[in-house]
Length: 180
Image 1 (spheres, one colour):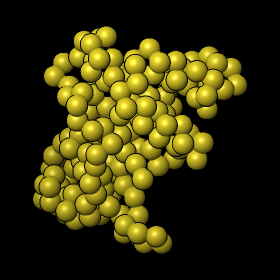
Image 2 (cartoon, rainbow, N blue to C red):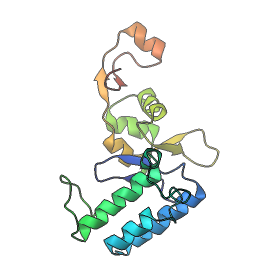
Image 3 (cartoon, rainbow, N blue to C red):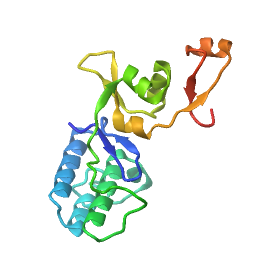
């Protein structure tokens, strides 16, 4: 099952909350993309009434454009347009890299890979900066998407011992988002 999607800009989109109908439509569009359907036909598929986001009104509203499914389908549309020569690539994006390819690592491994503490990884998950899933059915342990980890940019700050202990972090090195 596909849980994440990485856009041409490097944004990692969590697909875990798609409804079954939305997931089914995503899989249909992904297969059409992989079969190299013509770009105009793909646009008609994505923007047509079969799209569960457009079924009622047919309108692409601000709410629709902010939905993870719409973001993913728009990215597939752009990738296909570039691959078929209809549009130009933006920046150095690799349109041939599989946007659904991902691996999952433990929280401890994610912390090691980024050089931050385990609590920092948990905080990033809570903020939505990292995509995480339970390690297994009913598990209280999480696994982290490597693609989201690649896109994640922690900022290292140094807090005083008192602040760090109150926050539950080790006093030496913790992570915080820009502007916090």
